[in-house]
Every structure is written in C-alpha cells, then in structure tokens.
Image 1: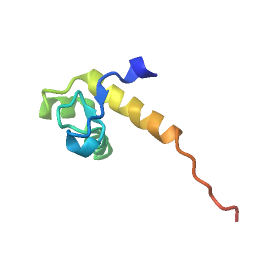
Image 2: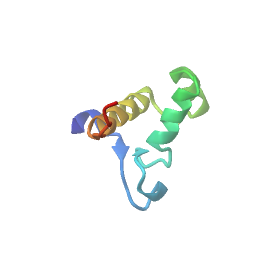
Image 3: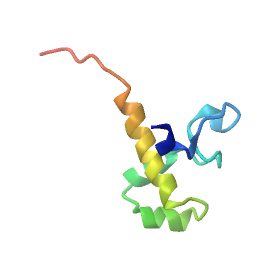
Length: 77
C-alpha cells in the first residue's frame, strides 16, 4: 500500500500533522471535501494547478485505507 500512497505526507509541522498532498499545505481532507461538494477532478485541477490527477487519486486511496482500518461497534437492535 505504501507505493500507492507515496504522495500523501504526514508532518507534525505542516497543517497540524494532518495528511497532506506532498507537504503543500493542501490536506487530504480538503481534497475530499471538494469532491464531496460535487466538484469534478477537472474542476479541482483547474482551481488548484499545483495538484495533479495522481494526487487526487492517492487522496482517495488514503481515505479508503484509513477508513478501512477503523472498526466501530454498532449495537444490535
């Protein structure tokens, strides 16, 4: 998995240690919020030319990996 998310960095001195895209101060969470706001990848890349398509793909991979590692106990009804 590491090779698939090599553009995602975590540095306690950048964005309070949140996962960022290549330490550019653009967080994975921000990219996900843009996508959730119904912006297309093309629109995001136009608005943030420092990003690349691979950055967005890896942000999604990182989020999927992070969520899959968490477990939640849901009480049965």
